[in-house]
Length: 570
Image (cartoon, rainbow, N blue to C red; front, side):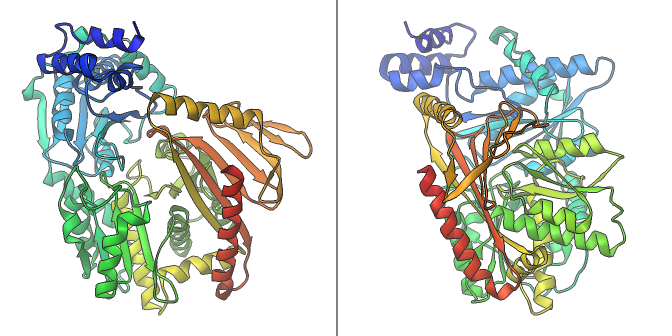
């Protein structure tokens, strides 16, 4: 008998409800392939929580996998805070079952004597991060699968500083979760311990976003913005934030302002994908808008498009957006006399290296961590009272302004990027020109690109694992005609200079990531996704630039170079 079938038969016991037992029996009788994928492993409660396809089974997101995760978390919270009233804030997105899952999670917590603040309806993930600190909660949970396809849902855990959990705490929680047996999950909640929250939190949250994301009112009435929430949670908050910040010409994509877990107007509700902003760009062309802003379903990621010097709307990649945001923040801090060398910006190992250059220009530190905003939030935690966090982000269309929220925050980011566009327009310039001006100031133009290779299911996971093994065994010696001179292996924590043979220890937590550097300054990172069945290749190249007028030509040369790098990785 296969292990999948053995695992499935355990779900036929009286510990599971009748509907679940029926669904499992149906898989056993009629669908061996789906049975295998649903039960071949336990859905991992990883360093930030869980994400998976909804359905019955140990490898699916459902009442029982969520219940076990929450029971383990409740056990940990009760151990950590034995002599106080404990509380957890819970938010959820627009996905199918998110509201139902949120109530299940709330019930398990209250059954364990923990007070719950539960949002009345869907809310952005950054609002949950804010709420944890605002209400003084011990933890926070958001039910979301971010920009994954509609069949997914997920569960992210935050600690009392509003940031996602990191080692060693995540390991302790994971240990508790893994030790929970189904009969130990307390599903019978106590509604008296649930407080429903909503508009009163929204108002404080919006005020904080406006305060942190606004430096001037210059040009705000003249900038024309197209905004789309791509059927997600931002529709509940971001339009109000725009209004409060003083923007008067904000046009929503009406069809995509309808919340829906089916995301019916897009192939993927991910602003990283140009296709997701097609309708927004069409509206922008129709009304002659200056800037396009789109957010993903849980409103932590934000995509930005702006007009180039030919009047054509172009999508900025995540690095480009973050370059403009970081530079503007640093300029404003410098103007205010707030830079004294004890400030830092945050970035990640797969994000553009231009942030080192920008930090050096303003005499601030650039701290770099693993992929994921929990690591940037951890920097804030570690250096609180020593160095002040200004802002930071990662290439996957995420940014964080200041430390009042400890996760990706599309709301404040949308306000800030719109302000920069407004200021630029008032000068007779544009967001696009701001980017090229920064490249000239730094003396280098950078270009990045990302390739995803999707390998679903059990076989896909094994194939991706083998690809990383092969890369380590047979590292490329040359990329796009330039010798590979350095390799960073974050799994072994070794950085090796291939020219001198010198090895250094990487002082960053271990992760299954490889980065190759070439003699001409190119950088390629290989990384299996932690949330989707895919392996990601991050390409970064650069070239000298001294005049903005040369940028289109240089950008094309850099894109051609990335095409050669992609060819080498096939």
